[in-house]
Amino acid sequence: MTIIIQLRRDDWKTVNYRAYQTTRTCLLTPMPPKKGSATKFTTSKSNRNAKLESQKQTDTRSEYFNRKGSGVSISNEYESDLSEPIDDLESDRDEDESEFDSSLDNPSEKDSTGSAEYESSEENVGPAKKRKVGTRNPTRQKGPAPRKPTKRPKRVDDDNSTKDEFDSREIFIPKRPPRPLNGIDYEPHNIHPNTLLFLKDLKKNNEREWFWDHESEYRAAKKDFDEFVEALSARMTQIDETIPPLPPKDISFRIYRDIRFSNDKTPYKPYFAAAYSRTGRVGHYAHYYLHLEPGQCTIGGGMWHLSESNNQGLQIMRQLIDRGGNRFKAIIEHPDMSKYFFRSPKLTPLEQFVAMNQDDALKKNPKGYPKDHKDIQLLRLRSYTIHRVLNDDVFAPKTNPIEKIIPIFRALVPFMQFLNSIIMDRDDGENSADSQSSGIDESDVEDP
Image (cartoon, rainbow, N blue to C red; front, side):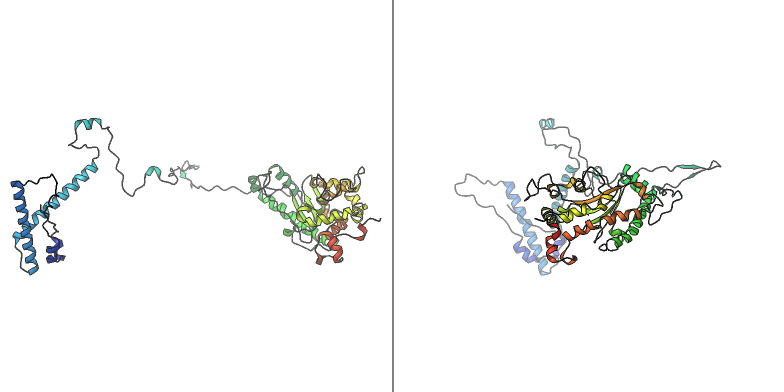
């Protein structure tokens, strides 16, 4: 058996033909059978003729390589002899590829060598759909669907001529005009009636859409309240010297509610509020509080949720009450406090003070105090505030409400200074360091 390894004619120019002759052209003979093998090799006349012919082709190519390497010109006889087997190989390869391609193009065609039984058992499946490589399936493409062209509405003029209108996709919502003033101007020392009307409507329609639609009314009402707070701040610094003059943004509260951890999901507060203290509306000091809401206008002061803001101050306050609390009780029972805040004839001022702060009080006795303590109701408190509800007529136009509010705040000054003396820092007090650290004065201790 003879195997000849051939190269294309174009590749011969770059090959060292002598090296190729010695390394690539070889005559392979079959291996002799192993001993004991029962296989018998028989040679026929046809096999001998094929062997002689292949040997002749090998000799022809060897002579061609020798002449090429020695520089002798090669005749067309050798080239024709060499071209035949190469062309045959190329034609065979082309036939194989075309046969393979045709089998891919027509997968539904059956092999002609198959039997009839095999063809009958095969299911009749339609030809597979061709799909281009590198293209997406149009049914799975992402993105919005194409818009259908919309027809523009036609405009009819007086002369019955039609013209196309501009197809604009923007919608312009006109701004709602502010409420009419009804002959009353906005003044810094008064609250305009429109401010109370806006808060009243906001309570009924506490929604974002309604608020955005009435934004102009909110801006006018917020400006009116800020000017009133600024005018009131000038008077508050006169009655209490510990309050500094601050801008309205440091005194007024925001109207937006924090609804992240609340069951009430209304987005806005139906009121305006402001607080005066040594640090404005924030800080751990006692605050003078003003609450503007139709039907529930409130004025007052004190410390809210003292257990959360200053737990140490709460413990000092309980120690003060436990030792007698004469100073604290004297402030609560003062005639000015009864005049503006504790006006019920059925309850004492201390009982009314406990009722004002009962919502935040403990249901059980605080730790370390007996149940039969005479001031156990005061010891259970965690907020110390005093407030009073005002009539809406106080803020009526041209009534000068600041002159009505200042006397009420002045009555709270001793109570507020007493609370600040308990929780304020050492550097802020006027008393000694011992009295500040303990928060107890000699007058607070009962006589034996």
